[in-house]
Length: 351
Image (cartoon, rainbow, N blue to C red; front, side, top):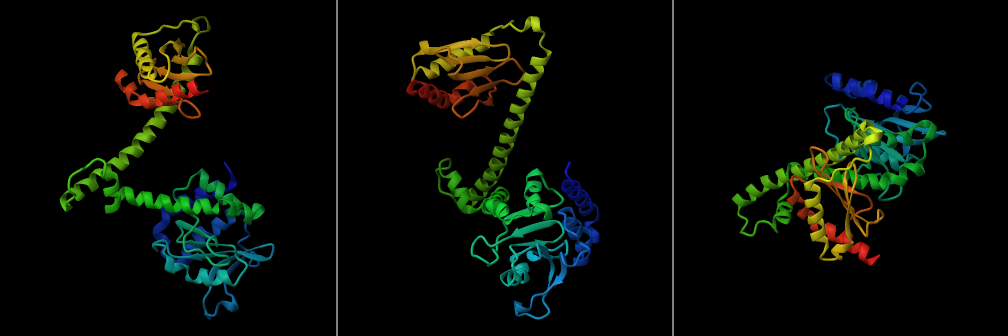
């Protein structure tokens, strides 16, 4: 575990356990912000590097200060504004950072309440702070991708070019994720109409709209859950395959038994594919862990794989760059992927 990750986890636990004690800016600075800067390698005890209560004469508003300014190579590069942990960070809290950003050599600004950290730069217009952050994270719930981005802000490896190279993508990704999250919890009327247009054909009254909103909300969540479930199931299947390979005695390695289900599955795939390719070219080659269905009996032309030698059954599809395993509850489930099977077969015809 990296030093920065260890430090962030310690701060994270402190925030989760003692957030009620961080009701003031000073508490946030002491308990979170200064330890955070130390985790990035800055000397918080050196006022020429971490400048507290920073002011700039050219701002035009006397008495205004930014909580911290970070100097790198004797140039101000990062401005930091802190708020109490109970503060909901909004655009209005950017005022001081906005003014100071334009009159210094700062390239990045951080607005934080000790739990949420918003990172800003000037992607929209040079030397003018964006109103939308390019990176947002919750220190009480961070992941490895956040660690990778924060490493770019470490004193020892601070690189403006490297940060800006991904900042624009991060900015829009973050914004879109927030929109999607909001749509999941509170689908807009326009969104409900769009996704329901091909399903509900009647007049959408207020009562129907209320009903459809609930349905869309549930469907949205189920799509996400199904995606996660399929990915977990696929990972489990791969794990099972490895375990089976390890446990399989060497002398039994060639014992392959083709089941009735595999034969029937092969016939279904063959019947589906015959619309675009000669059925004589569709060949079954059974293996120990799966039943392969090939074109021209060529391992380089896989059409499908039937993973039936386990409690959960899958069909392996090859219309993408690599095999994708999807769960089927019965042999009839193969028909749901007819178009994808035909697309794969057609590709081999055109090659």
